[in-house]
Image 1 (cartoon, rainbow, N blue to C red):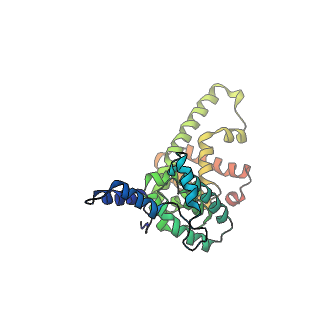
Image 2 (cartoon, helix red, strand yellow):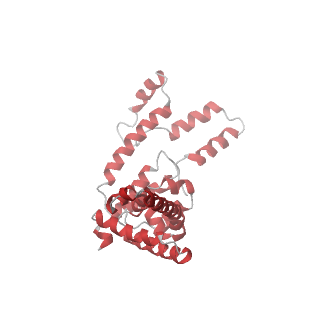
Image 3 (cartoon, helix red, strand yellow):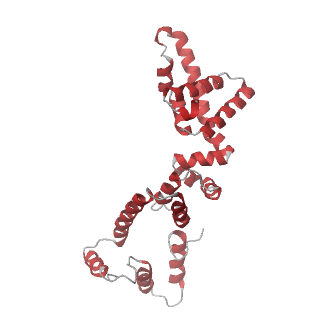
Length: 253
């Protein structure tokens, strides 16, 4: 990824290391120069371009670390940007995503590109592949983004859903055994579905996405053909009934 002139992360660390390793380099001079060139500043065209200096000097006298100041400023800027993206159209969102996506690997900054990705109904596969190729980034993705990754790459979809399907079948077997012993406390179907955590976890991941629902049905069909386990047939029926219970017409109609 190209970070341009912004010396953050590994690039910033390498730059400082090389600067300190130069002959006759004074650590104090290197640090001071780095702060002046990369520290907090206004645009040079602003009339108030130097008004912040007395404030920073005053804060320094109170032994407040610059890193704390930057965190506060970053938090304020992110809050403002997150409010603004709510009213941007897809074209503007794409432009902003192009600028901010290189920083998605930095936890302090990744909320912005993730928030933009959540608002896009169709994310470029180039972005989705970069996210899916990193376990850490993939795990940090909002569920809305993960759904698009699953549609793009069925192997990731199966990797994500297989453990949940295994939990569902084990839970179904446990309930069946319990009901044979206590026949008078069998819950009504609607209540049973709501209390079935593996089922609800699967439903949460699907959301209202018809494409993912169809992918899951095909996966269940393939598993049933391979195992002859009727739990997968039960799941197909319970999924449809649950969406009907919750009025998610995008799925059941």
